[in-house]
Length: 392
Image (cartoon, rainbow, N blue to C red; front, top):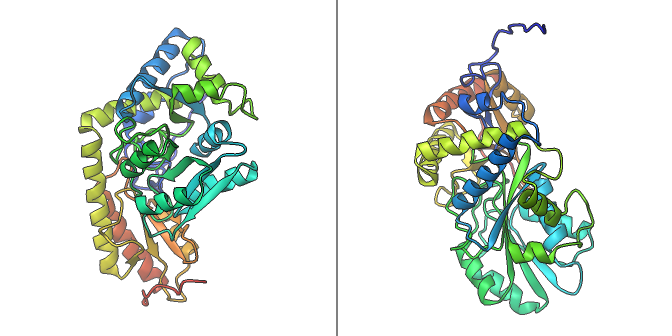
């Protein structure tokens, strides 16, 4: 028999995770004890129970996304980045026509970089990472280039937390007969999204963000006619969405080695989302976390990158203080030692750091975080909080 050994907890983390810090670094997130317990299974992909679990999960995710009969739910093993590349490599035009990518943050830039690397025609609609792209901006871009056939936008950018308008752009895409693709990896499960109502043709989502599951696979909502048209066009066997869809529809299994523990975790996470009261109630909890976070960080002297009127309830970027004694590595490690893990900044041209408001946390966790921030600031002797100058 294999022996197990007790290791004393180092942190005051969540139940069942006392030896690990609270994850405030966007994704993956801190999960509930029940989600952790749900992973204590050993499913075979050939098991009838696991196939039934996959079918149930795909059905429930379609309902949660507001997807209708014209859309299919495809589960793709791998991270959200894999899913983004799979969608672009299978569905974006490879020649003649072009994809318009809204680039007002690092997630849009990632999509544009993938297209460029694959030599696929791409037009960037570039704005600063604190400026929401408007319908007028998209209209002007479409008017300027009649070869644009696809539009790609990130719903909530991971760098600043900026939220782009989806419904209005979807209506424009429909009126202009363009394929509308949305990266909702950071927002699905907390911000309102309706695949049918928002006229979305393709949606990319992740289980380990606002759904409060764990990494292992990605979630796609794709119009059936687009999947059918993509047959035989993928440059990659691993990213062939049509083949993945066919296996899930026909044999009821994932084409690649499935992540059964992650699938079981998401089923439990969806149950907890329903128990919480759905997306609206989850958003309300995240919003309270965000308000608590911004209020306490501002009181200490930190400057949020986005104004509160534009701040999402997902992640907040704070500008790094000018004080020469502020070192992000030391700051983050000080918080980690106290049981909180935050993320490095990802803004263009300005030093920052990020703290997310999502996962299995509430405002009490944020309050405790703030107390730890004060302790670390005292240790580092930080006194000047004016933001560092932005680089050109």
